[in-house]
Image 1 (tube, rainbow, N blue to C red):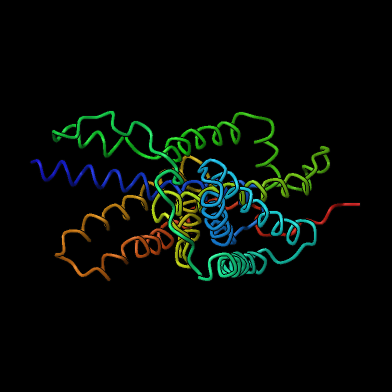
Image 2: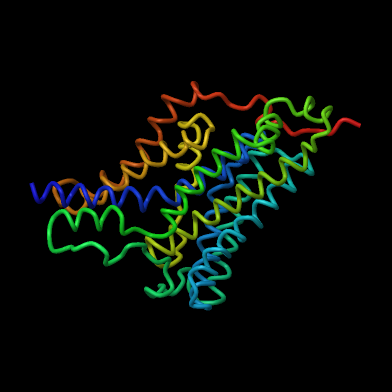
Length: 314
């Protein structure tokens, strides 16, 4: 019984830790996709955020400044994507692919200049995002260890749950959210009502980059403690899969990220058991991603104007 409770606590802790960066990126993807702009550049934006957050936290010694700068780095690449797709009418898939190559490329180049390596220096405990409620629970008993695993988690995890509620409220309870959704469905009708479709889409893509950057910073400032070229590999696409699974809704994306986070948590526990080949265990999140896309991509309601460059009526 004790072993079961301990394993359950570890799975839940890993689920929360691994779902956090995915949910930041997924919420950002919701902003872009619902407004009508396909953003497959989430991966590159997460990589830029991961690098910027780690480097700034290392040099300043302040994790909060690093976390914010990670978001700003993602927002910068979001602005590049928005300029290309919204302002210049470039193909959104090709532009996103370019961002996915540009983000890691620039990060690795700067890392080579600053650290003479493609990896950054590992962060110390003071430079990482701190945990909330650490040391509050008595870990001398099974129940205390379980509570410590579940609730003594990083600040970024608590914040992303609050953020998910805020995003849901913005989407469905505010005038801004109504206009955002309308721009993704009927942009020409929005323009006749005086809504700045291009401005709305530009802003949403920048917001998607900001949130993806925060997600990337979470990876290197909580899980891996340093930036490596492989830090974000695949996570941006898993976040997009979670959005598709969640039918482009913030609360649906939350459920999707919990599913993928649980798969990663399961990977951690099974990997520590030694009874299953590690290569097979590492495949779990990616296999689940493919299955989810096969089962749900056809059932999701994609915004009518998604992926279609909008030309302002003169």
